[in-house]
Image (cartoon, rainbow, N blue to C red; front, side, top):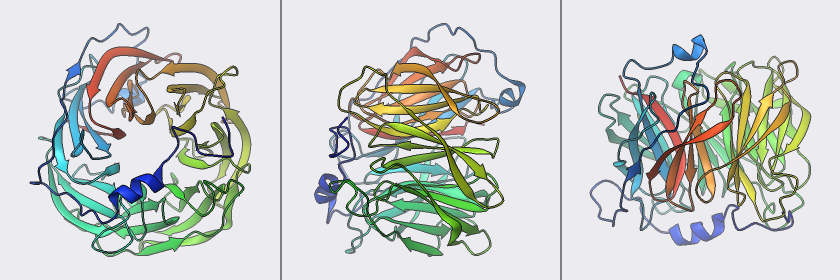
Length: 420
């Protein structure tokens, strides 16, 4: 790819912001044309379905998960959608509109399963240059969402959301503003006033895409002491000390982990061993492996590998990265190459060995999700309006299509909740 300019599959935030500026958030009851919905189910025979005992314990009694899909709204989407995934077959039910709202591009579900949170990726909310964050009451039995409240996101273009402190605080990354924020969750699941708002500063080498900070994700470490924010515009993963009792975010020492100039760090994932972490670099289509010092909150780079085949010459960029629940494999999505890159994890060092690539069966896989049992990976193909279900081989970590594809307009986030 050409790192000096944005690719056709890269983030087009400025264009989306212009289209959304001045638009009020669409709440339930407003009328938009809905896309046609259907799901085709024809699961293939897995080469290995054996699960480790630790993951078998996560299988819900119902054998099913609710799958919630965040989208960009428009002609084909009205907001948040949900469907059920059958863990025995890989089949999916028809998707239903769960919450009507503008561009809920990333979602997070409270650990108790009673609330769902969404960023609204807009640049104007209540007359101010900011996006929004929305809270919903969630009924695990029915999958229904009930709007609780909304807050400004403390910056334009919020694009990522996560939960910290066992659900005590919601964390937000604002791509357009290059900032992050934290909000307390109330007893009923609603959001309180922000307890932290931090503005990133600086730039990096690509003057088209790195002319300013662009916070692209925010995650809490497994110990709950540190928060990391990958900033595409700075070529840094910034590190903060998180105070669970106050909800504050203070710069750590060291304050960041640097990436190669022009990398464009996007999404981040900790390994369950609490010793390693990974960042996927959007602009150079690479993954960097870190050693993580949980006491000091330090990230030290160990390795950077390509997410692409050696012979690929097309225009592409990366998006999502996730670690399999058993810690043996890491997956990353390529937009343009339209594939999931698969890697095995070296047990001693946490470094990655390429396993190959699996086409996502659609265009622009902006996001994907791995169900908590580790059986299936669901790829959200933003450019072809499909969520494709893959079975994960429990011996090799490789993906195989199940034949199940769910039609959802511009899907960009996948989250799971056990059906009781």
